[in-house]
Length: 75
Image (cartoon, rainbow, N blue to C red; front, side, top):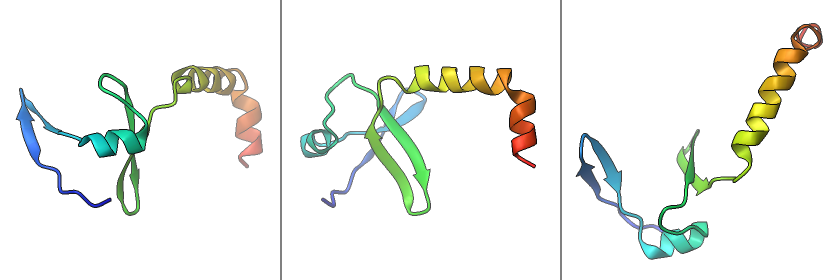
């Protein structure tokens, strides 16, 4: 799929309207969250993982608790 998208002004920001075919391909709908990642080829959009924030919070907790062990492993 190769569709040109127009950037529009939304308040003090800018936005892009995604065609229904793109939403279907991403398996998302209106009001859902997308994940944006910078890659060597540009920007990648994907459906956000619902438990990503919880996973990151758990990872930060472990990293904080095991800071010395992780520092030793990094040597």
